[in-house]
Image (cartoon, rainbow, N blue to C red; front, top):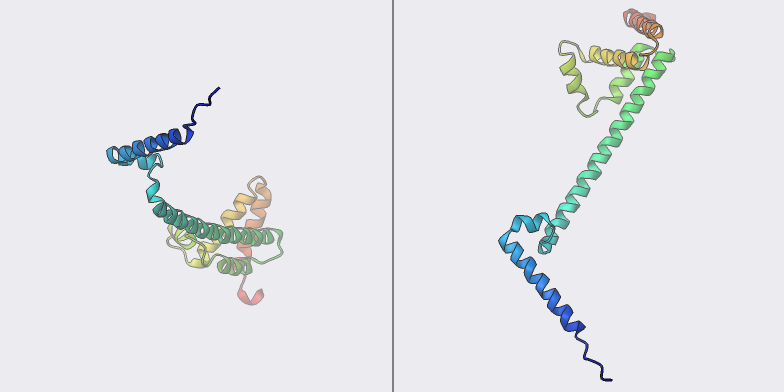
Amino acid sequence: MPVPPRRAGLTSVATLSGITLTVALLQAAAPDWSRAAGLDVWNYSSYEGDLRQSVAARDRLEAVQEQLDGQIAASAHVVGELIAGRIAFPAALDELEVINRDRLAFDGTMQARYPAATPRERMAHYVRSKIRAQLDGTPVLQDRVLARLEAELREPVAAR
């Protein structure tokens, strides 16, 4: 029995040519659609550049987020030490000013919330708000800690 000739190669070439022609016609007729569908593969180098820029931007944002997370954690640690009485309020304010000196949008936010306050007073407001939040479920302890801090601020510098 004779074997019919194989035309798989010819069929594949014809199919690929038809698909290529269809994509080219779609690009000509509806360039936005073909771009949205990801069929404009001839712009690959442009997309590759966009991807590199996006990856670099993501890396920068992750670095900023890591620094911010560190500043938040360090601030929480100082506030915890303050609540526990292991650090005095003025010393805590000093530490927090250093920790948050270059914290993204921190100073602007504090200025917006407390426009008439000095930078030191704004930091004291920040600490009080953190203490209130941390001790929200224990109002007696919250009042006791806040009263202790206010007394420390009123205490003359020489007495410390």
